[in-house]
Image (tube, rainbow, N blue to C red):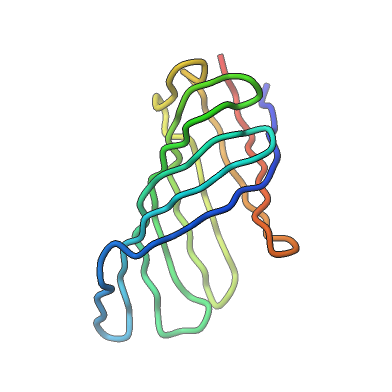
Length: 131
């Protein structure tokens, strides 16, 4: 039965290359550095590829992020796979644990991660299962 972890996180993104543009679409590469608080006390490090279109509020990204820390007292790491799109402001986001990526006390973890934006903060709900 899945368990839900909740908390907040802060993220810092830095460009890794100069964006390339063609036909109004800009492609970029960013580093991700996160700090999670709450039920998940961890750091996240990863890379993101982005596509920004000339249509306001329309873009896409994919990312891979290694999360290392403690989830409700269990220590280890795992990897998130991100896929997101915005269509004129309407957002679709999928963040899931890469199967087999869990280590330490988090070996065998599976799950999905949801982000909510409220009061200028990133809130998360991480629905996960462990053996």
